[in-house]
Image 1 (cartoon, rainbow, N blue to C red):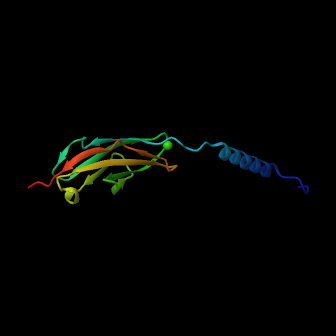
Image 2 (image 1 turned 90 degrees about the horizontal axis):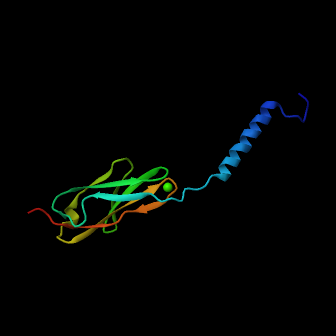
Image 3 (image 1 turned 135 degrees about the vertical axis):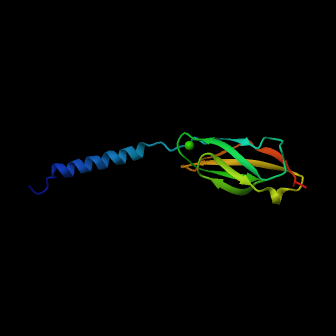
Length: 125
Ligand SMILES: [Ca+2]
């Protein structure tokens, strides 16, 4: 091989590298937030035992997790469908209203918020 001349293999490698960089540079970031809805319990429900909170969530790309909150306190998260969590109500069983909502997060860190629902929690006597 003559000095100063790239082999066909080296040229091919450089072209692949250049194409790869161009592809990375032109990729649009994901700015579409996930959609999320609470399926259960229902708004206005009266709860007297531990309750499964069920959520439907979707995204244009990949969801990484759903976070569950009661009165803005995070009680846990789920990263697999179906998105749900068992809510142990003991600490909220005071006969008062409590707000349940959930947050879906995608790979780009976009967060979608469910419409909150309000339930009344009372311990079973
Ligand atoms: Ca997204």
